Image (cartoon, helix red, strand yellow):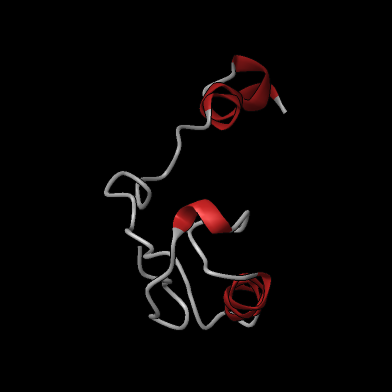
Length: 69
């Protein structure tokens, strides 16, 4: 198996830190995530730009009580 941090080949039966070869490589990877060197891609939601319906505003504007004032 190959360590994703240091790229060295190692025997996976000899470590408890899979997929890393050592605790050191595991902590280096964690530091990269916390330092935002590694990030997950952000795919925009195609429906996210639509405005949500506001039933309260629609009901309030067409209320007969609103016309009486």
